[in-house]
Amino acid sequence: MKPVIALVGRPNVGKSTLFNRMTKSRDAIVADFSGLTRDRHYGDGRLGNREFIVVDTGGFEPDSTTGIVKEMARQTRQAVAEADVVVFVVDVRNGLSGQDHDIARFLRQANKRVLLTVNKAEGMQESPLLAEFYELGMGEPHPISAAHGQGIRSLLEAALEDFPEDEDEPEDEADGPIRLAVAGRPNVGKSTLINTWLGEERLIAFDMPGTTRDAIKVPLERDGQRFELIDTAGLRRKGKVFEAIEKFSVVKTLQAIADANVVVLMIDATQGVSEQDAHIAGYILDSGRAVVIAINKWDAIDSYQRQTLERSIESRLAFLKFAPLLNISALRRQGLGPLWKAIADAHASATCKMPTPVLTRLLHEAVEHQNPKRVGAYRPKMRYAHQGGMNPPIIVIHGNSLEHVTEVYKRYLEGRFREHFKLVGTPLRIQMKLSG
Ligand code: GDP
Ligand code: GDP
Image (cartoon, rainbow, N blue to C red; front, top):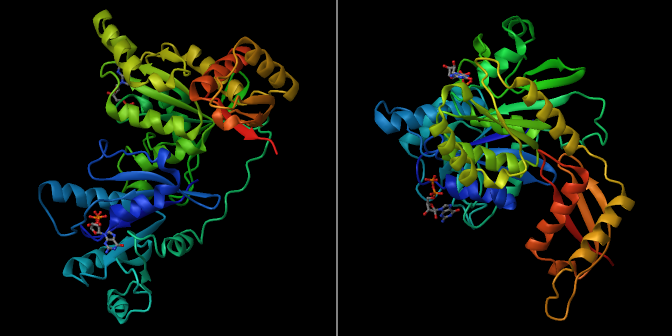
């Protein structure tokens, strides 16, 4: 599971600047869930081959008791509860404030690993001004400059030191269970579906993990195929371990998606596709996971609503065209057989084996049918193709002048490959590799 780093600090110390820095290496994958939960931003970051999630908590005022500010404090508490490491940001140019002391007190009670981070310290690595921050009793201050990109790497190394480098996934997972996550915003019906799948007894029977870091994984079997259901905090759990965490958790959803082989994206038919749904869908796409879209509460809409729904799917989820749409009613147990089949098919597609001779033949046929455009003096020459990965499947094309292959042409190739291998419910990535 990806470790979670929460950025905490009073307003204007530079948290969003630091957030952008930490997530920069994977710009495209930054999922902005700000529409989902006020003033919190979630992003993916990477250090070497280690991946992590960063949560920017916005501003934090622990003593506030009213309105928006109170809501922000609540959000921050949740982010801290879900984090593995807290980066507590203070500002060397403004010095320590009463608010910093309040936050420090709160963080001590939260019992999390905290890295005291002194921002805006460009050119001040050795400055005596840093000594002031020992007063907070949060250990040694880490000087950084978020704006100038100084000290970020060593901060991240410190933050991630307890977490091992990602091990390489075993190449052939054919014998293991299919890891499955049900993702969607609150109230779409995730728990209802999961309860239907599991039966109430099962929910009580399985073991609770000892710490919040261990993901709950529930074993399931269907038509002889083993599954492992990854918790997205939709499971209703009792007991004190998760008390501090609200039922819907963006962090848990992001981690579950990253950990899954197949994601069921659940949409509420009565609500249509919202911006939040599109955010989650975007994150699933970036993750490369196989995906099926379950349109739940199909029982509760009339034919007029169906038309509106179809239009919202077409406009908002166009980028997930490859994902099958399943109309279901989790409550009435309708459409669940086809949903299982779609999940299994998506997994089969995502882990499909594509032999080099077949790929190369398909490539040559595609080129024969339609040549890539000449760009200036160059015409891309595609020589052969091989499979570079699974879940998502990656096809690597070798040749010359491949940097001139257009996006349109790549999509054309993708379509040809998809058709041949009958790929459903998985993204397919095409990579160009210039030969020698
Ligand atoms: P947040 O409210 O904590 O998210 O703070 P922001 O990231 O919005 O930054 C507040 C202000 O501090 C902005 O004007 C930033 O440009 C500035 N700032 C952020 N990081 C640095 C830094 O490393 N050095 C300096 N000098 N200014 C910074
Ligand atoms: P979650 O927050 O995504 O886990 O959503 P829940 O499973 O708690 O469901 C939210 C509400 O939607 C509950 O009142 C459910 O009874 C209702 N619901 C769930 N599935 C269906 C369905 O298929 N049809 C209808 N009409 N209501 C449903």
